[in-house]
Image 1: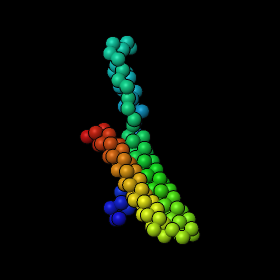
Image 2: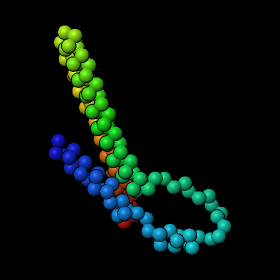
Image 3: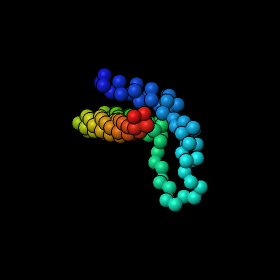
Image 4: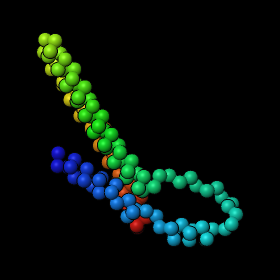
Length: 129
């Protein structure tokens, strides 16, 4: 659980300070001045920037947690209805299924988010080095 908390803090910190990874305007103007007026080669299509990758990763992680919370709430709600209607075996199954779905959703969201954040950090390190 400590590892997840550390990852969450790192993701939050990176999303909170996007200026550290922003591209400088002087670099862009230098590149434009050095290139000729006519473009003989096709321009490469640019992908997402560093900040977009990090923010996307944060959103994926948060989305996974939210979806997991929804799955857990659904399982508990179904279990409560089964207890009220005197079906305790079904209640335990529904609560267990909700917990399993919640765990899956949180794990998938966290892994996707960590992958996107890692991609963003890779972009940042490539620019630095």
